[in-house]
Image 1 (spheres, rainbow over the protein chains, first blue to last red):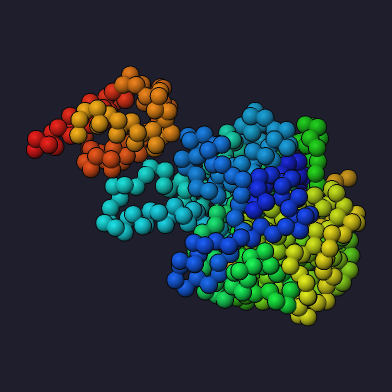
Image 2 (cartoon, rainbow over the protein chains, first blue to last red; image 1 turned 90 degrees about the vertical axis):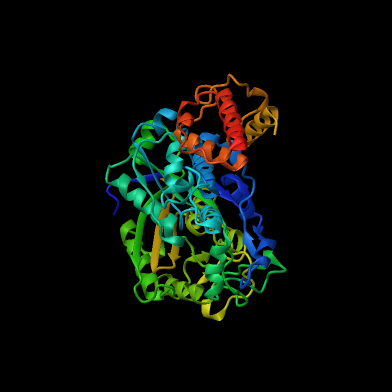
Length: 409
Length: 86
């Protein structure tokens, strides 16, 4: 249980639907797909997938060179999303630099693109003589968190969790705990990742990347669908500004929703394959943290990346705890899998579903795989009051995470 | 390569790397006060010049005394002439 109430007072997004949370929600509500063909993937030997969900609408030059020189794309995405969240929350420079505000932002790795560029040059003659001074700042594991803090003049704590697809869910959970402990009053938190063939290749070699829809990219990924054939990698950044309720009230800030529970656990059964019991246990811990029963959850936003095993394990776990009482959907059909950014992009959408009272369906779910049955799938925009939401994210490495959001009251 | 060609190549290389406006680049321009470069940028400035002119200058004492764009022009021109006469 969180020792103090923690609320969300700002959000920011860079997604395949462009800049901002508004574009993100518009794309999701319109049932658009952000997945496109990426011709460059065809030139890679052994790469079978040809599709990805690439961020759009970003001009890195909006960020002054002094800050941009230490950034790869993932830090650019995170910085622009943080600026949006800070604006939405009405935070000025003084508050950003007050020491009361920290950063909890992670990515799967440091910049794979910068790494590639360095080693391509290095391997030509084993020389460091052409290495730029800012290289390290692109590839360090806390690149996004540090670059955000530098660009926004933040002086509080820096945390950079790294747990692949669970990264931003953990970043939010750990930030909420830090605020609840009274260590910080505000935290900009979430995740960012940039697309690189290495990411798609990682899933492709494990036979977990989508390869059957290369000529019709918007038809994949297909979470829970019987024709699903794997992950479509994406990129972007999702950011939430968390704040203690006391601080938000004192500032007169608009409160978007409340974080009431968080859990993360390790699944040592396999470093790659998800396990229904471990997932169920993670959700159980999050529900206990929030002090709510499964029957009180109005909507479950699934991790569901459209892999054969992942979707089945998650559905089994959801069925164990919720049966058919709680509607379930995944936003991967629209957004692909933005890796470290996916959790908070999807949480931002959950916040809007709570605020506006509707559920977004799973795009490309046409025929439910019988092995993903036993839960209630959302298959069309559904108007209904949404009080409490459970959000899942699971990562390679056996890392599960769940967040409970609640309408603020 | 004439001195003018060297100056133009220096200016265009630095303009591209540091996003300077070519129209604002004069020999009197201070790299630090006017252009806002710092110690990290100086490391990259050396790499840009080494790559553009195919020379090694990182260990040169004179590099540390450079303050203006004109100092760079003079330094590179002298270095090029020295290389040609070697």
